[in-house]
Amino acid sequence: MKTYPLALADIAPSLNPAFSPNLHQWVGKNSHFASDGGTLDTVWRVRPGAPIEAPAGSLFIGYACDDGYFSGSRLMGVLCNGRKELRWAFLHLAEHLDPVPDFWGNYKRLGRCFIDPDHAISFIGERWHEEGDRRTCLWCGHEQQQEHWTENVEISRWVNVAREGQAA
Ligand SMILES: [Zn+2]
Image (cartoon, protein in one colour):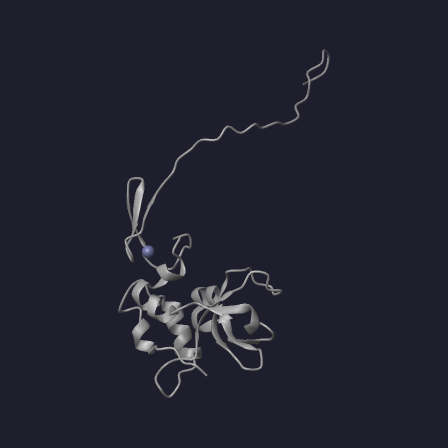
């Protein structure tokens, strides 16, 4: 089986705040390292139209077995739960996944910003420097600006009509 170049020490959060402490934990506990020093695990993306309970584009970490099983975990579960996220054998999943090209190489350069290039996910850790309406990602330099708007909202409710001789 193909291995991907990675040592656990390469993704230690002490090296780079963009590295996920939870992913480092999970790899330390659950990853399969081969005798060549690489790991069997990489990150895979669900193909459109896959008949499984995972939206197209969502990510798994693990490896595809020859018998069609996929051994691994949902990447978002790993990022949220760390070593507590269990590793499973998913039947018939492997055929619906494509490996993300050079995941570990990109992760080593960009950390969690490679997983979330839109910068839409709230990760654990100090990610943003805010100044007025702009903020800058401390991990990769990506910039966002805050938009403001007001909305006119029509609200209705039932009220009693006051009639003569009756308390309103
Ligand atoms: Zn970033």
